[in-house]
Amino acid sequence: MMNDVLIVVDVQKGLNEIPDFNHFLTRINHRIMSYRTVGKQVIFVQHNDKDMPLNSKSWEFADQLDITNADSVVSKTYPDSFLETNLESILRDNEYTNFEICGAQTEYCIDTTIRVGFHLGYQISVQHDLVGTLNNEIMTAEQINKHHEHIWQGRFAKVF
Image 1: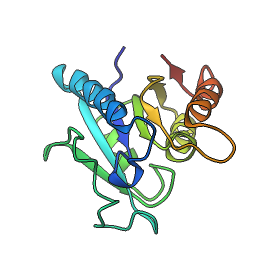
Image 2: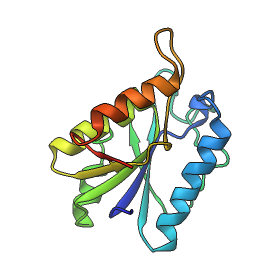
Image 3: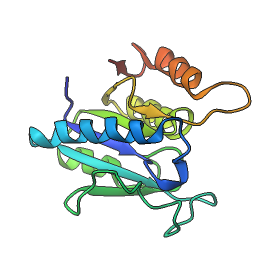
């Protein structure tokens, strides 16, 4: 299953403590390659805030992330990848009506971007093992991911 475009959100050094980060990154890179192989666009979203300041080490994309100079990069400062960014104009200019999303953090930037994208009229899909987050004091990263996938499925996105 492939959508018009793959959006890769916040796969940055500041989030490298996501459980099994290297394996997570390998799976994302495999999905990126799947899109490129059939000539589809990949858009990378890069977050900056007080925890990942612009141009800092934590702000940089993960070293192993398969990103090229030909890829589009959207810079954001909010959990919503659409708010005050050029993401929607890239999607509209290319006449994309659907997208697949992957990356971090499940309960913040991924969830917000899925819900806003849904309300903007996009059809969205998520591969269940391509979103990641950190453990917190209430839930493990695995529990957070499963919880959000359950909420998204059939409401805001197709989880496969």
